[in-house]
Image 1 (cartoon, rainbow, N blue to C red):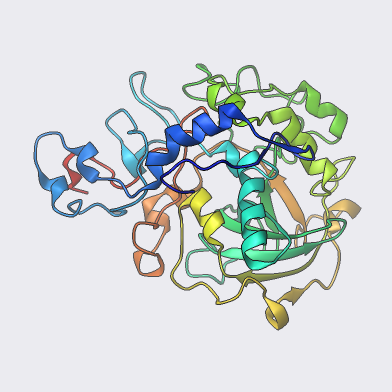
Image 2: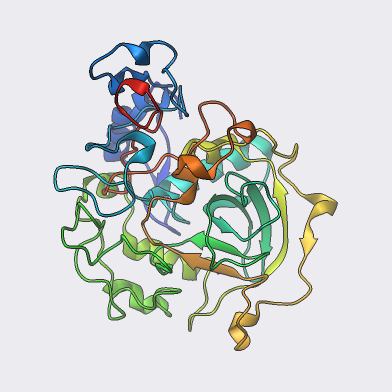
Length: 360
């Protein structure tokens, strides 16, 4: 994205034709200023410390966003249990596989480098990496999927095993955490209205089993303006996973055929804002791709998810947005942290600093 508004073809939803959306052009123009590196002076309260190169802020110079209200602000914005007069950080819904923004980003990348991949984010199961894969990108060939996947790992999880990728898909299952629905105050402590149970969201691990069950989901977050403006909705995002082979009818998981770490595209980094300084040099892993030695055993009664493309959507602030989970010496300056969202799933939170007056 650029600081000036450009006319962009934007997909309404997964699998549909492109169209020129006036609402989306308006939204892009409103958000355009947030693309430029921000000033930490938004954290000024009783001193001018933030003027001095953002003081001691961990993520100085990062893309600006809205200020998280409450005693814990910036990258310390809480992932749950927000105070009555404060905010809470969430995962962003436009990170979801098949969202308008993800499709636009991958289309731009494919045109720029002459490739043919689909973008996504999630969790790569690895204990070998210095920060458990956070910020790293991986290229996957997946059984039944037409395009390779180029995915960034922005989360970690004890329930994600080695050589497994847990991708954010519309209603992919909350897993260990859930800030999607069922909270006391939807739009404040959870994203979507209503309860979170099997009758609408499906199973805790995996979400709904079949495409026709997607229609039982709430279509929009409690604060629905931004999602409506870009043409996304949760029902279509859920259906997108089935339509593109990222999930299977009956609740099955497609098998990863090969996987390897690759360079993170600028277009994907723009979505997440986390960027490592030790990236490989190529978008293809070539001979370094690890080849699967068996298919996904979860579909045959097995318990190991190795070589499985699994799915999740817990709406929770991801691990890569927590300062203590990343190592500064592995990160590009001003791109040290994932930039999470407010409860509408689209508005970015400022994570340049973590306190008033930049003393943290």
